[in-house]
Amino acid sequence: MTDNTTRLDHVVLWVSDPAAAAGFYEKVLGLEPLRVAEYTAGKVSFPSVRLNEETIFDLAPLTLAERMNVVPDADKSAGHPVNHVCLALTEAGFEALRARLEEHGTPVSDIGHDAFGARGKARRSFYFRDPDGNIFEARHYGEERTEEEGAGAEEER
Image 1 (cartoon, rainbow, N blue to C red):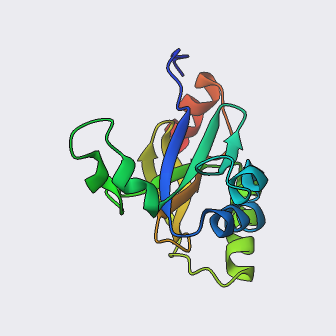
Image 2 (cartoon, rainbow, N blue to C red; image 1 turned 30 degrees about the vertical axis):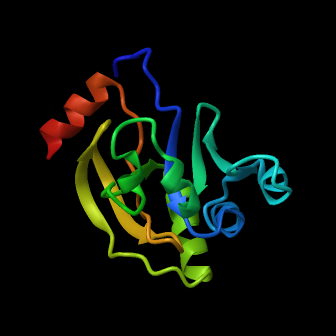
């Protein structure tokens, strides 16, 4: 895979209750909450959750929408203009996430196979919503193979 210098830093998700949303992402998705105490104390405008060492989800309250004036009509983006966010996981992480979602009563879609993504075809994937209606896809690509092993496996099929 090409090692690009551009990385995804953060995604801003509109939520009705940022502290509750942080709790969902911590308990159900296993993400590390950031700045929740500062948010509830009124010291910062929103909390976040850490997806990995390079990427976070900012949990922005819908009340911030009216102040979104960084580009014309930015305030109209409040809601759900993004179709979904996809999380690539290890196979064990995929299984654990699905189990946690089901434990917490979060509806999940059927499992799909061979969906195309940033790393090629994913072996399995499914979709779910957070409590604010943001849609996520969870997927795993399977075992990493060398090009030689991959070519051999393709020939066998």
